[in-house]
Image (cartoon, rainbow, N blue to C red; front, side):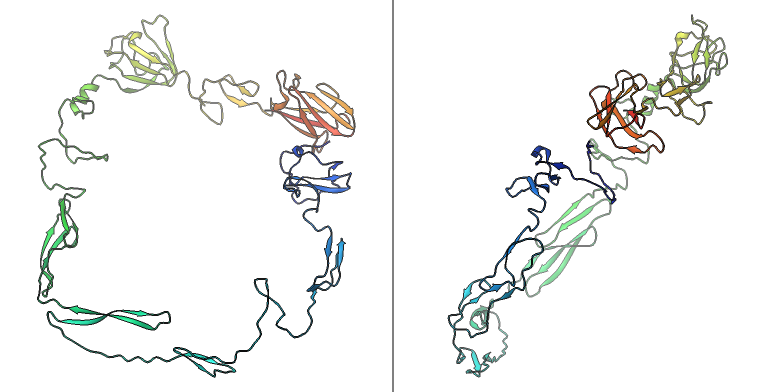
Length: 524
């Protein structure tokens, strides 16, 4: 009986003793095969493996070693290379003897051929060089040998110098370009005639140049014989008020503008509208005066306008102790305190509040409840219950603590199968009890049954039995671990199968006695 594994089995470098490869009489079908799978073919008496290419370009089963190892070896001597031993399909440990060339000593002739580096057979022309002669700019020493030396002729060069101080309108020549050949010899030069201008022509420019930080300059610059800067005008900016930038050079420009952040030293009066388009936070050192009453929804509100709007609205007045009658502070009865509309108290101590006109008498208050005044209430006026609105929290948030005591309890429900809840609302997990787990001995007593057939013992368990998970249980939702029925209760691996209903089966190879094993069940 095989066990299906859905993941790799890692033996952690432990030995696999007495293992036996699966025996089959023929190759499994492609749908039941995967690359790397092996089995022992009992018909061919050999080990076979499933590979991605069985030699036809397709996956298939081949004998182990048929495509990856040498099964037989054949070698024979050739014309130029000889083996010490020729073999015809030898197997096992094959010896080929000494491998050597078949060439013998002799003298080469003009008909002999030699193997080139391009793997071609070629002939070498026979004959001797009798003399090496010189040519243009080349001389040869020992022309007839045995070792001729070839040299380039020495070339002499004579340099001359001359001076001249030409005046206006005088012409002179100069070398404009030189042409050489591939050997470096000069083949031609170009001589250019240069004529100086007849008279002076003085010009001036007004280029822009950079000054110090936040400044720029205009330089009066001569371009003739009296070249140089003759005069400079400098434009100076003011930090936080005037910014100077420039594009330097002839025909440049100077820009005078406000800096990104402008500082006004004294008052600023704007005749029209002032628009601030930035999204940052603006600030004012002094007070900002605005119209008393805003017009549009986006207008700023004045202090008076805001106070007029919130006048008369209530606010939180503090905590209320409802444990005594009439409570603290006194909110009801003939000695009540004054209230403003919307004023409210939060109950800090549980108890009751009494209204003289209430047909049901006292109202029960818990910690966290709120008491709101629906209108202004005068002191000592014995207000009616309709003048108040009680907000009863009732669903307190459960608190946490190490013990029951004063730990706040919340309104919640708990499954009694999993939790113990005391009369004061203290909740604890059921100790040492798992309603979703069960232990069942494998025997022939309900809810377990035993069948032995074909060399296999199968135990079937009814999970819907009341002693296990009851009506509606599904085997597909139950985890199972099989252990020995006695100490040390080692986990064993049997074949576990689940039906589409409430039955789960545990099968063993061979005859297994009742109660030899047990199964731990967990319903998820």
